Figure 1: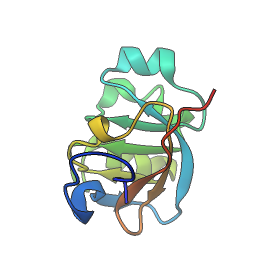
Figure 2: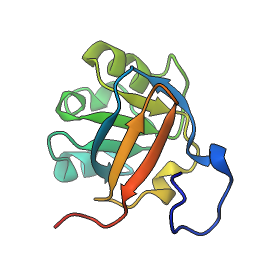
Figure 3: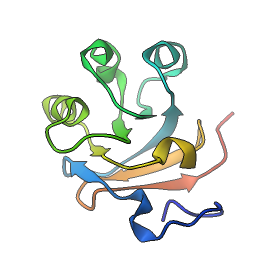
Figure 4: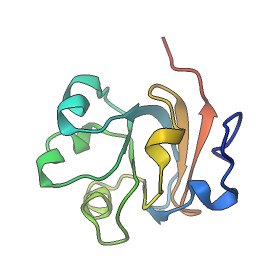
Length: 124
């Protein structure tokens, strides 16, 4: 579902990972490769899309509406923090940072372990 209008269709599982939480969430994707970028780019309620998180990210994570990371499983840092904060997340979504544009509207569906692009156009 994430493939809407994107080259390199890898099949239906390309947007699948391990879902954390039960409630779906829709928000603006903040696609970053580092904590430093997150500190300047993150807006409250955004969906963080990054390779992975670690303890150094803890100060920004409570601002988020959701988390999507490329690496990890049910016990990775992002998954544990998402559970602690009661925030939806999908972890282990390989290559997701190259398939979602910064500023696109995305929907996280943790019950399905999926993330999809709702509107690929950045807001603004």
